[in-house]
Picture (spheres, rainbow, N blue to C red):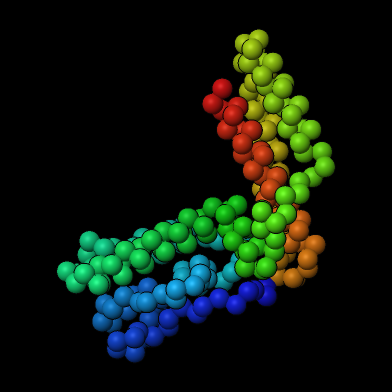
Length: 207
């Protein structure tokens, strides 16, 4: 997948010049890395290819291992090193939260591919808002009448529609490597769509 140019993470330690197993710290001398000031590649941080499908168990294992190395409480008494550990820890957490969530991961990949942001393209499927309104009204009617079975059925329908949207997001994110503008726009539309289903699902769960 062709991507926007991003800073390259360090591969050799700045102190001992040994090849680093992880871009955040040197296993040979313990030196913490200086990450680029600009936004860097979260996939590269975890040593992963920029693919939508991720082994979440392996990702979590890498996250725990890297967190132990750079945790501020065990980074040593040097104030500069402690500050660097805090910075690295925050970036590691941000990258992990982005990659572990399928929607956030697709958003990130779309941005990497130069696709439109939500603020730049607010399109949703033409029938979506009408469907949302109908389901919301039907749920409110069921709630006011005390029809718990109907409420559960509507909630299940909303959950099903959300899963369908998430499946479409995955399918489109896997096609980003073809670098076609239509794929990027369709993915943006589905990412906009899932926000509506998430919001409606939250409303019905709290009722």
